[in-house]
Amino acid sequence: KILKGVYATDKFEGITVNTTVAAAALETATALTVIADDLLDLETKLKPQYRGGAKYYVSTSLYALMKKFKDEQGQYLWQQPLTAGTPATFNGYPVIECTDMDVATTAGKFPCIFANLNKGYALFERMGMETEMDRLASTRIWNTITRMRIGGKVKNPKAIALLKVKAGA
Image (cartoon, rainbow, N blue to C red; front, side, top):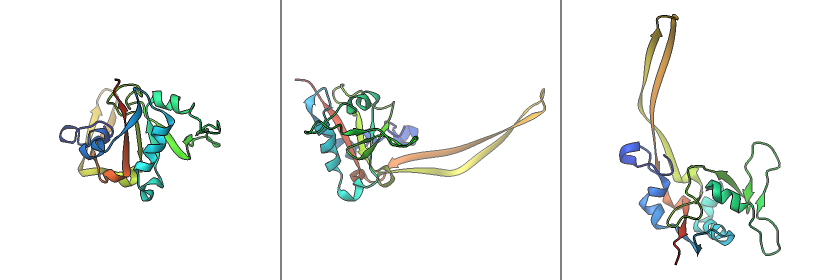
């Protein structure tokens, strides 16, 4: 829901459907593919005050592709984590694989977000919580069911940069 949700129905405004964020999306230099330079250009779409704490959120297909990107000296831009439980990095920024992101070779889709979501997206808890007791008479067990309503919205589009795949010629 955080990626593609519609606020009116889901109570989550998706990052890729936010009109301000989508309108400012960086289009890939090459049709139907993503190259390393696209990702490096995406970093500079964020002002320096938002780059600290920023991460790459990428599709599974782009995640696999990013592992192969090299700089001019032939050094990989991808770095495996040194400790368990920490994400790999690309050009020094953490990379998070998001299985709900779009495929990296589909025109008009968004396979990558480079963002500081702490500054760019807000999750909120709506007022009120419900608790219901449910008794299973045959086993003499009580189940407690608790419901809480949450939502989310883009709060600062300047802290989020999208990468859009260019259509083929």
